[in-house]
Length: 332
Image 1 (cartoon, one colour):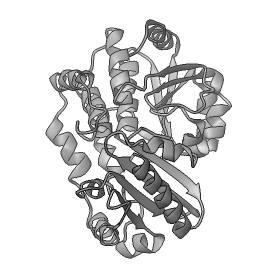
Image 2 (cartoon, rainbow, N blue to C red):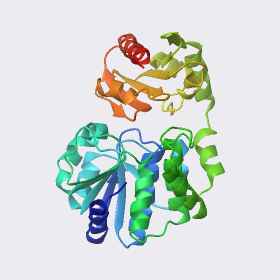
Image 3 (cartoon, rainbow, N blue to C red):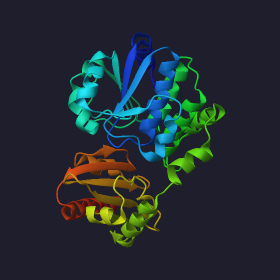
Image 4 (cartoon, helix red, strand yellow):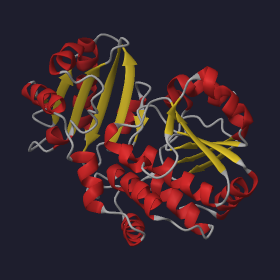
């Protein structure tokens, strides 16, 4: 839970910062974008100025959250470093690890003395001036909600939509084991403030493109099982992406059907990136801790949902991660 010292830090930030720049991790998800927009609307209502600057553009499935407020900007050093210099505070949301800032890491690190971090992930390194890190929270959006309402702030409809999107996507629409009574209490308050759960689910999960569907089909066709069926592995190469016409398509949910296979306790999705690196998404059930597996390769996340971006040939990464997942499944 958020302590009094952290609440006081947040209150000082709100009172003292005229211009805030909000930043999150690479490949922003629902919790990242939802937390940024929810906090931005509160700061604007208090009379402050806000810019949202991320390495990567907002995914198409989350663009609807920006309908009535500040638009997230894609970071360009010549255009944005002056803004980072001029702002009173940088607020880093849904991320405390510098290496998950991508090409923004040097710029934000250089201004760590005025960076304020709000996150719910286990942290590896926090060079930031102030940190509110609560790993018991199901989502950073939950922390933003508690901090804002703790100062007497009002959650308007657009903020409620954004924070609900963050809360619901990070809990798998309330099916992950991070879901708690605390999560449902916040969700109820957000619905009362105007969030629409039907729209939120539809916008995020029911707008798949034909390219995504073709690519998912190809990936699932290549499903392999290991550790007696406890580990399910699928992968997508650059060639598969190109043939499906799926460049830029959000593939964050492709592990869901793998984890739904009877007997599978760890789902592994390996994707070949265009820059010579490989992205690995890990999902698990119960007490199997894929965060530890990810951390061993420089990644991170949560016990049941983590990720890695690592160098290496696609086939080599598939073997290395599959072997590690098998060892984890057998030990568990």
